Amino acid sequence: MTNHAQIGFGLLGAGLIAPFHAKAIQASQSARLVGVADLDRTRLAKLTGEFNCKAYAGLDAMLADPEVQVVNILTPNHLHTQAVLAAARAGRHLLVEKPPAMSLGEVDMMQAACRAAGVKIGVVLQCRTRPSVQAIRTAMQGGRFGKIYQADTIMKWFRPADYYRMDAWRSSRRSGAGVTIQQAFHYIDLLQYLIGPVQRVEAHMTNLAHPGFALEDTALAFVTYANGAQGVVQASTALWPGTDMRVEVNGENGTAIVVGERMDTWKFKDERPEDEAVRRLGSAAAATGARGAADLGFVDHQAVIEDMVKAIVENSEPMISLASVRPTLEWALAMYLSAQQHTPVDLPIVDDQIMW
Ligand SMILES: NC(=O)c1ccc[n+]([C@@H]2O[C@H](COP(=O)([O-])OP(=O)(O)OC[C@H]3O[C@@H](n4cnc5c(N)ncnc54)[C@H](O)[C@@H]3O)[C@@H](O)[C@H]2O)c1
Image (cartoon, rainbow, N blue to C red; front, side):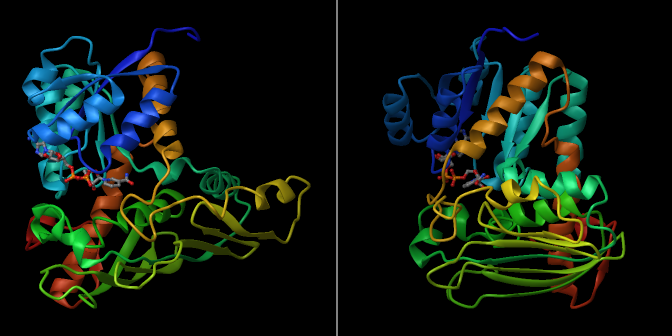
C-alpha cells in the first residue's frame, strides 16, 4: 500500500521532548498531530497553541478521541508503564520514549498488553536511524568487520545543576534520572543494536559534579559481548562543556567510529568504491545532546514517526521494537547491579534485585 491517509498521533506529555515529537509529526507527510495531553495546564496551552492541535486534560480524554491512533508516551521514565498499559487496552499503537520502563518485568507487561490488544509498540531510540549507524549495521550484517575485537561508547556530556532542578523526577534515581539509564541509554542501545548481546558487565558509578543529587552522573563499565568482543561504556554529564559522543567498533578487518551523528572513521582492509560516500555521512554541526537537554534536532524523531506509520500500514514490526530494546534495558540494569554489588554481573539478570 503506497497511498494512505495520514495516521493520527497524540502526545502524552507537553514537556521538554514534546516539541521535537510535534515538529517530527508535522514534518511527516504520513502523520498528523491530533492533540496533546498533560496535567500541567500551562505547558499544555503553550504547546497546543504553538502546534495548533487539541488539548486534553489527561490520558483518558485523549483515549476517548477516535482520531488518535498512536499515543506517544512522553512522561517521566517511571510513569511510562501505566500509560502504555492503558493506551494498549484502549487499542492504540504506541511509541514510548526511552528508557521504555524501569524494570524488565514492566517491559514484559507492556509487551503482553500490546500483543493481547494487537497494537504496535516502538521505542524512541532515534539514534538507531542515523545513516552512519545504519552503515555500521549493514557492514556488521555482511561480516565486513570480520571478528569484532572491541566496541565502545564514550559520552562526555555536561548538564548543569539547573537541569536536575527543572523537574522533580530529573534528580530522582528511582525515576531513572541517572546518566546510565537516562542519557547513556541511547548509546548503550547502539552497542546492543550493532554488537550485542552482552554476556558480562563490570560497572562503577560515581557522582563527580552534582553534589546534593542522589544519582550517578558518571558511569564506567567494562563489557564482554557474547561474540567474544570486549568494550567500555564511559558516560558522564559532569564534563564541561560536553563533547560529542563516540561509538567505536574495531574488527579484524576494519574500524568505524561515529562522533555525534557523523562518520568520523571508516576504514576497511578491502576498500570499496562506496566507502568514500560513507565517510561523508552526517554533519559535525548537528546537535546531538552533548551540551544541553534541548540541544537536539528532530530529523531522527521524524524517522521514528515515519517508521511507526509504515509498521501500521504494512502490519510489520517497528524498526525499534520493544522486544529489541529489552536487552538494552537489561544491560543498563546489569550496570546498576554491578555497581551496587561491586562485582561483575553475568546476564541474564534478576532485575528485582536492583535497589532504586
Ligand atoms: N529521545 C530523546 O532524545 C529524549 C530526550 C529527552 C527526553 N526523552 C524522554 O522523554 C520523556 C519525557 O522527558 P521530558 O524531558 O520531556 O520530561 P518533562 O518533565 O519535561 O515532561 C514530562 C511531561 O509529562 C507530564 N506528565 C506527567 N505525568 C502525566 C500524566 N499522568 N498525564 C499527563 N501528563 C503527565 C508532565 O506534566 C510534563 O509536562 C522521558 O522518558 C525522557 O527520558 C527522550
